[in-house]
Image 1 (cartoon, rainbow, N blue to C red):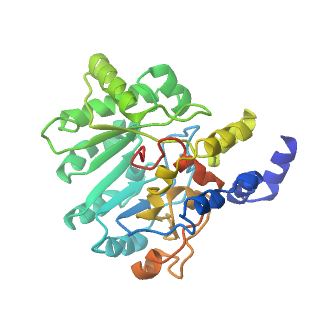
Image 2 (spheres, one colour):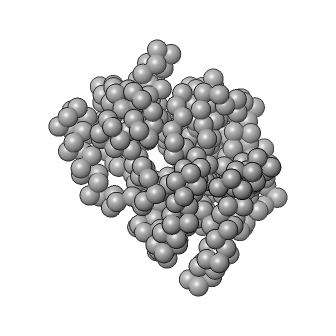
Length: 342
C-alpha cells in the first residue's frame, strides 16, 4: 500500500489510475471483445451528447468518479457551451445529457438548458438533489418543468443510514425534500410528461442487484414512507476509477473486485455499451468516448479531438478507446448512464 501511495504522488491522478488498471492485463478487455467479434469496438452512431458542465459540486460523495467537490474550479465557459449548442443541432443527436459535479452550479446553466430545449432535443440533467434545497436553487424544479427536462438523480438507498454513509451527513433528508418538491410540480406523476428517474450505486465492492426488482422496492418504500413517486430506477455499477478506486485500494479489495467484474463479463451487454451511441464532452471541450474515459483523460482516437472541431463523419469512424475499467459496463446485466443494458 505504501508503494502504491508513493507512485501516486509521482504521477497525475489519471495516470496512476490507468497504471493500476493495467495491472490486470492478463485478462485484457480487448481480448474479450475479439472472441465475440466486437474488436475494434466501433460506434453505431452519435445520438447522445453528454456534457460535463464542471466539477464544482456541493457534495463530496465517496463513490464519485468525477472527484467533484466544493473546491473544484473546473467550469465549462460560455464559449464552449456555444460550441456544444451548435453540435447539438446535429440531426442524429436526439438527447443532450448534462452532468457535473452539480451541473446546476454552472453560472450559464439556465441559459444553456433553455437553448437546448428550444432546439427540440431531449434534455437530461443529472442532479444530486441536495443542490435543489439551497436558497439560490429553490426555483429549479419549476424551471425544469417549464423546459420539460428529464431529471435523473442519485439516491443510493431508501434508508437514511445508507445514503448518509455514502454521500455525507444530512444528504438523505435533503434528497427526500428535493424529491417531494419535484413531485409538487408534477415530476414522477402519471400523465404529467415530466420524467423523474433515480440512480442506485452499490455502497461497496459489489455488483448492483436486478434493476426491475429493486425498482419495485424503491417505489414501495418511498411511497409508503414519504409519499414520493418517480418513473424509473437505474442501477449503475461502480467503475474502479477515482474515489471508488481509492476506496478499493484502501480496503484491499481492488483485485477481488476486478476479478468479479471480469468473471461477470456479459457479451450481450458488450454489444450495447453506451460509448457506441454517445460522445462525452469534458468541461474544457475535449471529446471522449464516455464519461469514464474522460476522468482517465483518455481522449477519442480521432482527428476531431475537441467540440470546436466536431466532425461527425470522423467520430463515427473512430475506434473506441478501451481499458480494464470497461469491464464495469459489461458485468452482469451491464451498466450505462441509462442503467442496466440487458
